[in-house]
Image (cartoon, rainbow, N blue to C red):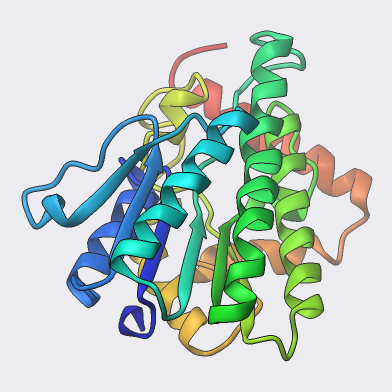
Length: 266
């Protein structure tokens, strides 16, 4: 699939799911222009030298504008034609009663998880309509119900899912498609960044980054508009659609509160 793109852009590709996307891109199409938009570089033993690092704080609009200028310059030199794949992977959450740990942190979640995606996608979309391509946005199973203790994060991912589905429909017939990827708990730095420790979620309920990436790539090949990765996650998100919203919220609150208990924290 990666061979169909001459440009592959990943946000937050220095770790976790984003890093797995870059590793798969290197394996699938090392001749493509592969760019990592992140505050920290992509580091790996295998062909990391071919990844163009564009240092960017995706919570800041001016930084995204600067990154876009660098991107277009790189494309003019290394990939003047061909389809573009934009993988909006960057995102983070924070665990606690709103507005814990502080209001700035919650506003930062909105800046990265929502504004950053819209800003970068909006800048690249006119060019993508000319050259063709795909936008892959990483949402979450948190998008399917309210998420007490992760309120701002869950709401941001609900936005990402619905925005992606709407944009995909708007772009029908243009040569550009959008895929929303909804992973559940994944073995990444997410929980540590959110203020939780290893073991918050049972390994039986988690996927690896590679599993998420492999499933999402297959979904992109099949032209799907969204995918929930992992059969257990698909089952849980399906069931949540049948129960009353208030009840679903109460159940979600109990499950998410257990994350803190599982690590011995309260």
